[in-house]
Amino acid sequence: MDVLESEKRGNAVGQRDLLRGQPPATGIRNALTVDVEDYFHVAALAPNIDRDSWSSRESRVVGNTQKLLSLFEEFDVRGTFFVLGWVAERYPQLVRDIAAQGHEIACHGFSHRLVYEQSPEEFYEETLRAKKLLEDITGSAIAGYRAASYSIVRESLWALDILVKLGFVYDSSIFPVRHDRYGIPNAERAPHRMSTPEERSIVEWPLSTASILGFRLPVAGGGYFRLLPYQLTRWGLASINRRELRPFIFYLHPWEIDPGQPRVSASRLSRLRHYTNLEKCEERLRRLLGAFQFGTASDGLVQLGLLPGNDGSARLRAG
Ligand SMILES: [Zn+2]
Image: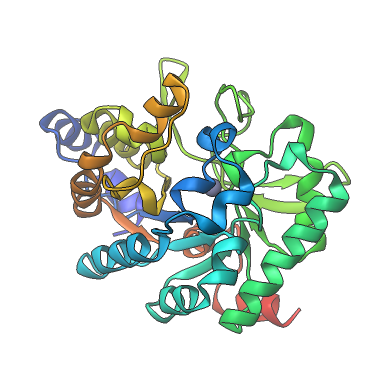
């Protein structure tokens, strides 16, 4: 069913569905995304974890990502995996396994350093390194990028020019909310083509927020998915499909379905963000996968007319 057709079913039906607690069937395919990194890469824990200790810590990213792959297989959904270069270098077979199951491989940078803490030269080098590595492993062009901890903010919009120079066709790093570490509070909420500071153009899929009485509620996934009541997330996501008639983008990290991960001592706020409801997350994810339709971010952008379809994507790859 296309969007217009579903709209013709009438708002009353949609409202009833929302009130009954059933997200309405809209025929819209949302983007399911995973940022492939380990629990010790996370920005919230960074003050308490020395980078030099990464290689000696117990890595759980392969097992947790495989768990997500099985779950996605069970629900017959394909998504986009933004893989950290550090992980891809150590576990290239994991990247091949993800790609072999029909998912899109995209880039999550190399070092998980925040973009606005890097110089443009450093950002160029590490992003090129990560992109090349993923392309060597998969044998395909990498189209999408997501910054560590959504760190493309007003002060680091220059990064978008570097992404275009490196051949990325879309970015999903801008979180249109207010947060202490990331966010452009007034940024456009819908996926769109945007101009970079040097007047190039790139497609941006901002992390999803629901609009409630003029406020923006981050319902895109991750910590918000674990901290907010599931019903609120589902309502917010359904409202994007139903009222705004467009797909949302959802994200999760492999460590978020791993309550058994080693605990790291950190500030109270960081512990709240990282550890709350880890044990509930997999069950919530199952409910979400059953409630909405999902696909890759690239497919979603093609569906929206922001990226060219089959023939066009071939041209993009060739170019
Ligand atoms: Zn990350």
